[in-house]
Image 1 (spheres, rainbow, N blue to C red):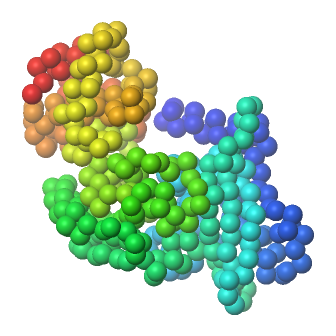
Image 2 (tube, one colour):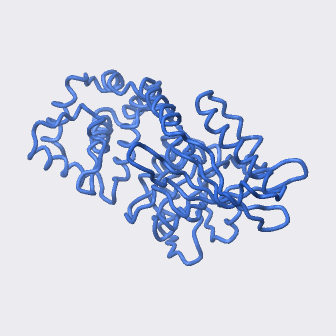
Amino acid sequence: MMKHLTVIFLIFLSYFSYSQQISFSKQISQSNDKSVIKVKEKWNAYINECIINTFTGNKDYLQKYWNKTELKDNRKDIVKDNISSKYPIYLFGEVFTFEIIKIDSNFYKLKSMVIASDSVGKNVLAIFTNYAKIAVTDVKFYNYFFYQKEKLKKYQAKNIDFYYPPNCKFDTLKAKQAVQFYQMLSSQLDFAPNNRLTYIVADNLEDANKLLGYDYTVRNTTNRNSGYYQSNYNLIVTCQEFHKHEIVHSIFDNKFPYSPRILHEGIATYYGGTNGNDLEFHIKKLQTILNSDTNIDLSDFKSLDKEIDNCTNLFYTVGAIFIDYAYKNGGFNKVMELFKNTNSGDDIYSTLNEALNIKKDQINSFIKNYLKDYK
Protein backbone atom coordinates (compact mmCIF):
# COMPACT_ATOMS: atom_id res chain seq x y z
CA MET A 1 0.00 0.00 0.00
CA MET A 2 2.83 2.44 0.86
CA LYS A 3 4.33 1.92 -2.60
CA HIS A 4 1.01 2.77 -4.25
CA LEU A 5 0.64 5.91 -2.10
CA THR A 6 4.16 6.97 -3.08
CA VAL A 7 3.39 6.57 -6.77
CA ILE A 8 0.18 8.58 -6.41
CA PHE A 9 2.05 11.31 -4.52
CA LEU A 10 4.73 11.53 -7.24
CA ILE A 11 2.11 11.77 -9.97
CA PHE A 12 0.21 14.35 -7.96
CA LEU A 13 3.43 16.34 -7.46
CA SER A 14 4.25 16.11 -11.16
CA TYR A 15 0.75 17.26 -12.02
CA PHE A 16 1.23 20.58 -10.22
CA SER A 17 5.01 21.05 -10.52
CA TYR A 18 5.15 20.92 -14.30
CA SER A 19 1.76 22.52 -15.04
CA GLN A 20 0.15 19.51 -16.58
CA GLN A 21 -2.76 20.65 -18.66
CA ILE A 22 -5.31 19.76 -21.29
CA SER A 23 -4.75 21.87 -24.38
CA PHE A 24 -5.93 22.16 -27.97
CA SER A 25 -4.45 23.42 -31.20
CA LYS A 26 -5.15 26.99 -32.27
CA GLN A 27 -7.39 25.72 -35.07
CA ILE A 28 -9.58 23.79 -32.62
CA SER A 29 -9.61 26.50 -29.96
CA GLN A 30 -10.72 29.17 -32.47
CA SER A 31 -13.23 26.99 -34.32
CA ASN A 32 -16.79 28.27 -34.65
CA ASP A 33 -18.10 24.85 -35.64
CA LYS A 34 -20.67 23.95 -32.96
CA SER A 35 -20.02 20.22 -33.37
CA VAL A 36 -16.25 20.65 -32.97
CA ILE A 37 -16.84 22.79 -29.89
CA LYS A 38 -19.17 20.14 -28.44
CA VAL A 39 -16.61 17.35 -29.00
CA LYS A 40 -13.80 19.51 -27.59
CA GLU A 41 -15.74 20.36 -24.42
CA LYS A 42 -16.72 16.73 -23.86
CA TRP A 43 -13.16 15.49 -24.40
CA ASN A 44 -11.82 18.13 -22.01
CA ALA A 45 -14.35 17.09 -19.36
CA TYR A 46 -13.53 13.41 -19.84
CA ILE A 47 -9.76 13.84 -19.45
CA ASN A 48 -10.35 15.95 -16.33
CA GLU A 49 -12.51 13.21 -14.82
CA CYS A 50 -9.89 10.58 -15.62
CA ILE A 51 -7.36 12.58 -13.62
CA ILE A 52 -9.67 13.40 -10.70
CA ASN A 53 -11.07 9.90 -10.33
CA THR A 54 -7.61 8.38 -10.05
CA PHE A 55 -7.57 9.89 -6.58
CA THR A 56 -11.25 9.52 -5.65
CA GLY A 57 -11.50 5.86 -6.65
CA ASN A 58 -14.71 6.32 -8.65
CA LYS A 59 -14.69 3.68 -11.40
CA ASP A 60 -18.08 4.46 -12.93
CA TYR A 61 -17.33 7.83 -14.48
CA LEU A 62 -16.52 6.25 -17.87
CA GLN A 63 -20.15 5.16 -18.26
CA LYS A 64 -21.36 8.62 -19.22
CA TYR A 65 -18.60 9.25 -21.77
CA TRP A 66 -18.26 5.97 -23.65
CA ASN A 67 -20.54 4.30 -26.18
CA LYS A 68 -22.92 1.54 -25.06
CA THR A 69 -21.50 -1.13 -27.38
CA GLU A 70 -18.00 -0.95 -25.94
CA LEU A 71 -19.30 -0.56 -22.40
CA LYS A 72 -21.17 -3.82 -22.90
CA ASP A 73 -17.95 -5.53 -24.04
CA ASN A 74 -16.01 -4.00 -21.13
CA ARG A 75 -13.76 -2.23 -23.61
CA LYS A 76 -13.66 1.47 -22.83
CA ASP A 77 -10.67 3.78 -23.21
CA ILE A 78 -7.85 1.46 -24.29
CA VAL A 79 -5.35 4.33 -24.60
CA LYS A 80 -5.86 5.32 -20.96
CA ASP A 81 -4.09 2.16 -19.73
CA ASN A 82 -1.19 2.14 -22.17
CA ILE A 83 1.45 2.76 -19.48
CA SER A 84 -0.29 1.48 -16.36
CA SER A 85 -3.53 -0.30 -15.51
CA LYS A 86 -3.75 1.73 -12.28
CA TYR A 87 -2.85 5.23 -13.47
CA PRO A 88 -4.21 6.72 -16.72
CA ILE A 89 -1.65 7.91 -19.22
CA TYR A 90 -3.25 11.36 -19.04
CA LEU A 91 -1.69 11.80 -15.60
CA PHE A 92 1.83 11.53 -16.98
CA GLY A 93 1.85 14.75 -18.96
CA GLU A 94 0.04 17.40 -20.95
CA VAL A 95 -2.78 16.10 -23.15
CA PHE A 96 -2.62 18.08 -26.39
CA THR A 97 -5.35 17.50 -28.99
CA PHE A 98 -4.34 18.83 -32.40
CA GLU A 99 -7.09 17.50 -34.65
CA ILE A 100 -10.87 17.14 -34.48
CA ILE A 101 -12.24 16.51 -37.94
CA LYS A 102 -15.54 15.28 -39.31
CA ILE A 103 -15.39 11.91 -41.08
CA ASP A 104 -19.10 11.34 -41.74
CA SER A 105 -22.48 12.71 -40.70
CA ASN A 106 -22.08 11.71 -37.04
CA PHE A 107 -18.46 10.72 -36.39
CA TYR A 108 -15.46 12.91 -35.62
CA LYS A 109 -11.83 11.82 -35.41
CA LEU A 110 -9.65 13.12 -32.57
CA LYS A 111 -5.87 13.03 -32.70
CA SER A 112 -4.01 13.77 -29.47
CA MET A 113 -0.66 13.32 -27.80
CA VAL A 114 0.60 13.07 -24.24
CA ILE A 115 3.71 15.15 -23.55
CA ALA A 116 5.68 14.54 -20.35
CA SER A 117 7.64 17.52 -18.99
CA ASP A 118 10.29 17.70 -16.32
CA SER A 119 13.20 19.94 -15.38
CA VAL A 120 15.22 18.62 -18.34
CA GLY A 121 12.73 18.93 -21.17
CA LYS A 122 9.74 17.35 -22.87
CA ASN A 123 9.09 13.87 -24.23
CA VAL A 124 6.15 12.51 -26.19
CA LEU A 125 4.69 9.41 -24.52
CA ALA A 126 2.01 8.67 -27.09
CA ILE A 127 0.30 9.99 -30.20
CA PHE A 128 -3.11 8.41 -30.69
CA THR A 129 -6.52 8.52 -32.36
CA ASN A 130 -10.00 8.22 -30.86
CA TYR A 131 -13.45 8.84 -32.30
CA ALA A 132 -16.48 10.75 -31.10
CA LYS A 133 -20.08 10.33 -32.19
CA ILE A 134 -22.48 13.23 -31.80
CA ALA A 135 -25.96 12.12 -30.84
CA VAL A 136 -28.98 14.37 -30.52
CA THR A 137 -28.14 15.54 -27.02
CA ASP A 138 -24.72 14.10 -26.20
CA VAL A 139 -21.25 13.02 -27.36
CA LYS A 140 -19.95 9.47 -26.93
CA PHE A 141 -16.38 8.33 -27.45
CA TYR A 142 -15.10 5.27 -29.32
CA ASN A 143 -11.77 3.50 -29.46
CA TYR A 144 -9.90 3.54 -32.75
CA PHE A 145 -9.90 -0.26 -32.61
CA PHE A 146 -13.70 -0.41 -32.45
CA TYR A 147 -14.02 1.77 -35.52
CA GLN A 148 -11.35 -0.08 -37.55
CA LYS A 149 -11.63 -3.72 -36.47
CA GLU A 150 -14.00 -4.71 -39.29
CA LYS A 151 -11.12 -4.05 -41.69
CA LEU A 152 -8.93 -6.57 -39.85
CA LYS A 153 -8.77 -10.31 -40.23
CA LYS A 154 -10.08 -12.32 -37.30
CA TYR A 155 -9.45 -15.79 -35.95
CA GLN A 156 -11.72 -17.02 -33.15
CA ALA A 157 -11.19 -20.08 -31.00
CA LYS A 158 -12.57 -20.90 -27.55
CA ASN A 159 -12.15 -17.75 -25.42
CA ILE A 160 -9.68 -15.85 -27.62
CA ASP A 161 -10.32 -13.43 -30.50
CA PHE A 162 -7.21 -12.85 -32.62
CA TYR A 163 -7.15 -9.69 -34.75
CA TYR A 164 -4.43 -9.03 -37.31
CA PRO A 165 -3.92 -6.90 -40.45
CA PRO A 166 -4.59 -8.46 -43.87
CA ASN A 167 -0.89 -8.38 -44.80
CA CYS A 168 0.24 -10.08 -41.56
CA LYS A 169 1.88 -13.51 -41.83
CA PHE A 170 -0.52 -15.02 -39.31
CA ASP A 171 0.40 -18.55 -38.14
CA THR A 172 -2.83 -20.40 -37.37
CA LEU A 173 -0.97 -23.38 -35.87
CA LYS A 174 0.72 -21.17 -33.26
CA ALA A 175 -2.59 -19.47 -32.54
CA LYS A 176 -4.15 -22.88 -31.86
CA GLN A 177 -1.26 -23.69 -29.50
CA ALA A 178 -1.95 -20.42 -27.68
CA VAL A 179 -5.61 -21.33 -27.31
CA GLN A 180 -4.77 -24.80 -26.00
CA PHE A 181 -2.34 -23.38 -23.45
CA TYR A 182 -4.85 -20.75 -22.35
CA GLN A 183 -7.52 -23.43 -21.88
CA MET A 184 -5.18 -25.74 -20.00
CA LEU A 185 -3.99 -23.10 -17.54
CA SER A 186 -7.49 -21.63 -17.11
CA SER A 187 -8.85 -25.09 -16.30
CA GLN A 188 -6.05 -25.82 -13.84
CA LEU A 189 -6.75 -22.55 -12.02
CA ASP A 190 -10.54 -22.89 -12.29
CA PHE A 191 -10.48 -19.50 -13.99
CA ALA A 192 -13.55 -18.37 -15.92
CA PRO A 193 -12.84 -15.03 -17.63
CA ASN A 194 -15.58 -12.41 -17.53
CA ASN A 195 -15.05 -11.57 -21.17
CA ARG A 196 -13.15 -12.95 -24.13
CA LEU A 197 -9.42 -12.35 -24.44
CA THR A 198 -8.69 -9.91 -27.27
CA TYR A 199 -5.37 -10.75 -28.88
CA ILE A 200 -3.89 -8.07 -31.19
CA VAL A 201 -1.03 -9.36 -33.32
CA ALA A 202 1.03 -7.99 -36.22
CA ASP A 203 4.44 -8.59 -37.75
CA ASN A 204 6.00 -6.16 -35.25
CA LEU A 205 4.86 -4.40 -32.09
CA GLU A 206 4.69 -0.97 -33.71
CA ASP A 207 2.20 -2.28 -36.29
CA ALA A 208 0.24 -4.04 -33.53
CA ASN A 209 -0.01 -0.77 -31.63
CA LYS A 210 -1.21 0.99 -34.77
CA LEU A 211 -4.25 -1.30 -34.75
CA LEU A 212 -5.19 0.36 -31.45
CA GLY A 213 -4.77 3.85 -32.89
CA TYR A 214 -1.21 4.71 -31.86
CA ASP A 215 0.88 6.67 -34.31
CA TYR A 216 3.49 6.40 -31.57
CA THR A 217 3.79 5.01 -28.04
CA VAL A 218 6.73 4.51 -25.69
CA ARG A 219 5.73 0.84 -25.68
CA ASN A 220 6.91 0.50 -29.28
CA THR A 221 10.01 -1.64 -29.73
CA THR A 222 11.79 -3.52 -32.50
CA ASN A 223 12.16 -6.55 -30.21
CA ARG A 224 10.36 -9.46 -31.90
CA ASN A 225 9.73 -11.09 -28.52
CA SER A 226 7.90 -8.14 -27.04
CA GLY A 227 4.31 -7.80 -25.96
CA TYR A 228 2.15 -6.51 -23.13
CA TYR A 229 -1.15 -7.21 -21.41
CA GLN A 230 -3.77 -4.63 -20.39
CA SER A 231 -5.75 -6.22 -17.56
CA ASN A 232 -8.64 -3.74 -17.47
CA TYR A 233 -9.66 -4.72 -20.99
CA ASN A 234 -8.35 -8.29 -21.15
CA LEU A 235 -6.15 -7.33 -24.07
CA ILE A 236 -2.82 -8.69 -25.32
CA VAL A 237 -0.76 -6.69 -27.82
CA THR A 238 2.18 -8.49 -29.41
CA CYS A 239 3.95 -9.65 -32.55
CA GLN A 240 3.67 -13.36 -31.70
CA GLU A 241 0.63 -15.58 -32.19
CA PHE A 242 1.67 -17.61 -29.13
CA HIS A 243 3.14 -15.28 -26.52
CA LYS A 244 3.08 -17.62 -23.53
CA HIS A 245 4.45 -15.05 -21.06
CA GLU A 246 1.60 -12.60 -21.73
CA ILE A 247 -1.05 -15.34 -21.79
CA VAL A 248 0.04 -16.31 -18.26
CA HIS A 249 -0.38 -12.67 -17.23
CA SER A 250 -3.86 -12.57 -18.75
CA ILE A 251 -4.93 -15.37 -16.38
CA PHE A 252 -2.96 -14.70 -13.18
CA ASP A 253 -3.42 -10.90 -13.25
CA ASN A 254 -7.18 -11.45 -13.21
CA LYS A 255 -7.24 -14.38 -10.80
CA PHE A 256 -4.83 -12.78 -8.30
CA PRO A 257 -4.85 -9.01 -8.91
CA TYR A 258 -3.31 -8.13 -5.51
CA SER A 259 -0.38 -10.53 -5.55
CA PRO A 260 3.15 -9.05 -5.65
CA ARG A 261 4.44 -8.17 -9.10
CA ILE A 262 7.55 -10.31 -8.59
CA LEU A 263 5.30 -13.39 -8.34
CA HIS A 264 3.35 -12.39 -11.45
CA GLU A 265 6.53 -11.90 -13.46
CA GLY A 266 7.93 -15.05 -11.87
CA ILE A 267 5.03 -17.32 -12.89
CA ALA A 268 4.97 -15.80 -16.39
CA THR A 269 8.72 -16.39 -16.75
CA TYR A 270 8.47 -19.88 -15.27
CA TYR A 271 5.94 -20.93 -17.90
CA GLY A 272 6.85 -18.69 -20.82
CA GLY A 273 10.35 -17.38 -20.31
CA THR A 274 10.96 -13.76 -21.19
CA ASN A 275 12.70 -11.77 -23.90
CA GLY A 276 12.55 -14.76 -26.23
CA ASN A 277 14.44 -17.13 -23.95
CA ASP A 278 13.22 -19.82 -21.56
CA LEU A 279 13.81 -19.98 -17.81
CA GLU A 280 16.93 -22.17 -18.21
CA PHE A 281 18.63 -19.39 -20.19
CA HIS A 282 17.89 -16.79 -17.51
CA ILE A 283 18.99 -19.10 -14.70
CA LYS A 284 22.35 -19.60 -16.43
CA LYS A 285 22.60 -15.86 -17.04
CA LEU A 286 22.04 -15.19 -13.33
CA GLN A 287 24.64 -17.81 -12.40
CA THR A 288 27.16 -16.11 -14.71
CA ILE A 289 26.42 -12.70 -13.21
CA LEU A 290 26.85 -14.04 -9.67
CA ASN A 291 30.17 -15.61 -10.58
CA SER A 292 31.49 -12.20 -11.59
CA ASP A 293 29.85 -10.25 -8.75
CA THR A 294 29.29 -12.12 -5.50
CA ASN A 295 28.11 -8.98 -3.68
CA ILE A 296 24.74 -8.73 -5.41
CA ASP A 297 21.92 -8.71 -2.86
CA LEU A 298 19.16 -10.81 -4.38
CA SER A 299 16.75 -9.85 -1.60
CA ASP A 300 16.72 -6.22 -2.75
CA PHE A 301 14.03 -6.81 -5.34
CA LYS A 302 13.62 -3.19 -6.47
CA SER A 303 17.27 -2.92 -7.48
CA LEU A 304 16.97 -6.11 -9.56
CA ASP A 305 14.15 -4.80 -11.75
CA LYS A 306 16.10 -3.68 -14.83
CA GLU A 307 17.13 -5.21 -18.11
CA ILE A 308 20.72 -6.45 -18.36
CA ASP A 309 22.55 -6.92 -21.68
CA ASN A 310 19.20 -6.49 -23.50
CA CYS A 311 18.33 -10.08 -22.68
CA THR A 312 17.51 -10.69 -19.01
CA ASN A 313 15.89 -9.15 -15.93
CA LEU A 314 16.99 -10.54 -12.56
CA PHE A 315 13.69 -9.48 -10.97
CA TYR A 316 11.84 -11.86 -13.32
CA THR A 317 14.36 -14.65 -12.79
CA VAL A 318 14.29 -14.43 -8.99
CA GLY A 319 10.50 -14.48 -9.10
CA ALA A 320 10.60 -17.61 -11.26
CA ILE A 321 13.01 -19.25 -8.78
CA PHE A 322 10.43 -18.87 -6.00
CA ILE A 323 7.81 -20.45 -8.29
CA ASP A 324 10.18 -23.29 -9.20
CA TYR A 325 11.00 -23.94 -5.53
CA ALA A 326 7.31 -23.99 -4.64
CA TYR A 327 6.55 -26.49 -7.42
CA LYS A 328 9.36 -28.80 -6.32
CA ASN A 329 8.30 -28.67 -2.66
CA GLY A 330 4.55 -29.00 -2.87
CA GLY A 331 3.46 -28.91 -6.47
CA PHE A 332 0.76 -26.65 -7.86
CA ASN A 333 -0.96 -26.26 -4.46
CA LYS A 334 2.21 -24.78 -2.96
CA VAL A 335 2.43 -22.30 -5.84
CA MET A 336 -1.16 -21.30 -5.13
CA GLU A 337 -0.22 -20.62 -1.52
CA LEU A 338 2.14 -17.90 -2.73
CA PHE A 339 -0.67 -16.14 -4.56
CA LYS A 340 -3.56 -16.83 -2.19
CA ASN A 341 -1.65 -15.69 0.90
CA THR A 342 -1.32 -12.17 -0.48
CA ASN A 343 -3.76 -9.35 0.24
CA SER A 344 -1.71 -6.53 -1.25
CA GLY A 345 1.15 -6.17 -3.67
CA ASP A 346 3.57 -5.00 -0.99
CA ASP A 347 3.79 -7.94 1.41
CA ILE A 348 6.05 -10.21 -0.64
CA TYR A 349 8.45 -10.84 2.26
CA SER A 350 5.71 -12.03 4.62
CA THR A 351 4.28 -14.15 1.80
CA LEU A 352 7.61 -15.89 1.24
CA ASN A 353 7.94 -16.47 4.97
CA GLU A 354 4.43 -17.90 5.39
CA ALA A 355 4.26 -19.99 2.21
CA LEU A 356 7.89 -21.09 1.75
CA ASN A 357 9.37 -20.53 5.21
CA ILE A 358 12.01 -18.18 3.78
CA LYS A 359 12.66 -15.17 6.01
CA LYS A 360 13.70 -11.85 4.51
CA ASP A 361 17.27 -12.05 5.86
CA GLN A 362 17.60 -15.55 4.37
CA ILE A 363 16.49 -14.73 0.81
CA ASN A 364 19.89 -13.76 -0.60
CA SER A 365 21.69 -16.86 0.69
CA PHE A 366 18.72 -19.08 -0.16
CA ILE A 367 18.72 -18.11 -3.84
CA LYS A 368 22.50 -18.38 -4.20
CA ASN A 369 22.51 -21.83 -2.59
CA TYR A 370 19.53 -22.88 -4.68
CA LEU A 371 21.36 -21.94 -7.86
CA LYS A 372 24.35 -24.08 -6.93
CA ASP A 373 22.19 -27.20 -6.93
CA TYR A 374 19.72 -26.13 -9.61
CA LYS A 375 18.57 -28.77 -12.05
